[in-house]
Image (tube, rainbow, N blue to C red):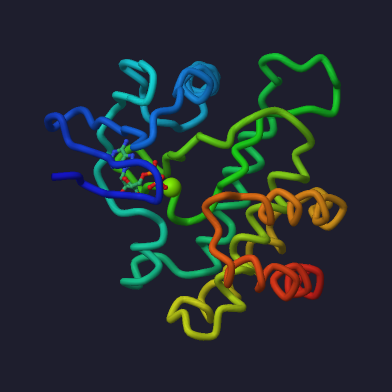
Length: 214
Ligand SMILES: Nc1ncnc2c1ncn2[C@@H]1O[C@H](COP(=O)(O)OP(=O)(O)O)[C@@H](O)[C@H]1O
Ligand SMILES: [Mg+2]
């Protein structure tokens, strides 16, 4: 029985120390495992990777809730959450890139939102590095802002009001110029196979909200 099931991966507990994250339709975790190992070595908080073979990633099992869960139950307020998200971006983007020789490039997570931050005993830890790559830091900020805004503009979502406040707090605390990369972020979300039609339809209004919140 999986601990958690996402849109294309299941996460299983192996024992008290390790989980297995397995892509259901194959795939290759080598790229994300390499980035996770690289940022871990530089002191960025990620799960320790024990094994990476084809669709399977065996990694350190984290305790504690996701940032989303902590927000929902009231253990974390939106101001602190927004600042925390901005701080994780800042720390990630301080690291030198692994591959690129372009001086503007940084390591990017590209899916850094409250479901992908676990508040573990050793502090906040960032999971789900499948989209990670290298490029301009502002693109990472733009994607996080857009993802928060997508929730904020979904009227039927109970988390919409909190997402709206979190977006404002995130933008207040993050440096850089995410609006510069909004069109690129939008293009990436539009072609994301994990987004349903209705979610794609809300992207323009989500982008509008980010632009007004900055
Ligand atoms: N290292 C880990 N330790 C404990 N739980 C984890 C770990 N990695 C993922 N999980 C659990 O699995 C869920 C989904 O993981 P994630 O990597 O974000 O995949 P996806 O978003 O594709 O479902 C997380 O929200 C968390 O509950
Ligand atoms: Mg995830």
